[in-house]
Image (cartoon, rainbow, N blue to C red; front, top):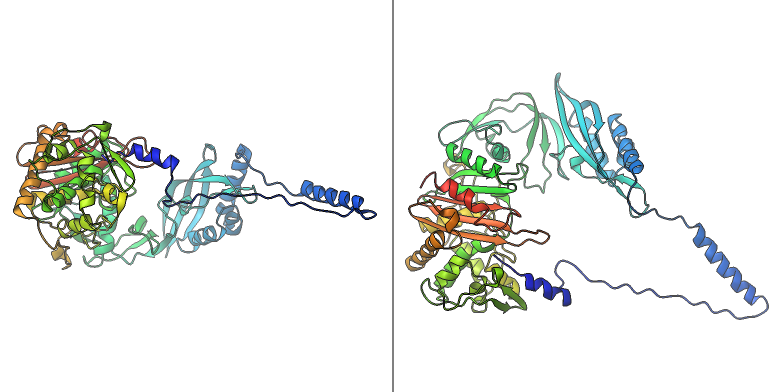
Length: 557
């Protein structure tokens, strides 16, 4: 939930310096004093006139919105120069001459692209779309390349002149700053990825898995025994967390086979579910083993399901509850405070719609997702208590997961004061993704953290991450009771309706600056399946991510 509207009101009157500064500029006027000796008055007059004249003739920097002519002329200059191979002229029309020169030079020299034709589309404000057609030629082999891109013209604040706002994506939409385009022997052999049943996995069949296939090739291409072909590829910069990407295959290599843990039926169902909700992502695991059975994202450019870094909202209360129960600060069926408001560290926290539960139990507060029930315990915890619980019991926030492709393992930093309190309800500095939160539910279901993985560790003899301890039987029993009650009678009940058997769930909503609606989260388990999902800017988790997760849990367990 993480609702902090009142905090925002406080900040208007007493702002804290967080990632920004408040500056005051004081302007002073110079005063000239002249002695009236002889021509002193005339000298004074001449001095003033000379100053005014210089100011009048000082070039004025043009400001204001760009005209249609400025946008069109600048875009035409850039595109024409690029098409004609005049790299210096094209780069000079951009905001970063050095970076543009390097990438445009490499376009011909390293990517071996010739016969470039650039066709502008219809301008919208300062944005000009354009289509690209070219030919990739290497060692006597040629293949066509065609794609769409766009550029944006902005005004230089220093000179007032219009220029192309430079980013690498202008050259190709798959490029990020620091990336390059290269044609040649790929170095990394292609792979044939297969699911747990031996069926081939392709991006055409499973659109969400494009980034997963790139990651599998990067890690296992050489180990799988294939032979490299000749390709035009995006080579990622040294600081990038993304995998290299093939754009054109000039000659086929021989692929090696990589078996994954993906379940074809669950993967297809996950793809169908996220296709119905914009900005949604979901992951399904097998708690008893840690195998990843499905990964899906509505947006295919970035793998939010495995690499996202988002505040998980109240789904984090699963981890926090285990901490409070272990420390004797809460018990499922004992009374627990849930006031409308609770102030800690100078922040005034509240519940969604300012509700309160009078005389309620901790189970009631968990099921209804009462923020203040957790915030009220912050003063009884050390600053590193939540961090240790996440690491030692749930295997999170240690940056040591090895799932087979790039992933983010969650972050629960040590925090103090108000930020520590916010972390207890999944805000503050806490960051997770659906993989992490599915693992949290899997840990509750199985009783032990098992690091999720997409490729069996037996393939490359890698060591999986582990947690240093498990919850006591009493704590685990109460945590399962809390999640089961929430699935049956709490905020998760509507979504989990019809999901039978051994079940547990938790909803979450995480407020994000600049978003009208919060990110909606949902994590749950049913038997030997655990899943979690997020819908960014979607609203409450029970209404958005909940139906996605529940639909997948109904398929097994």
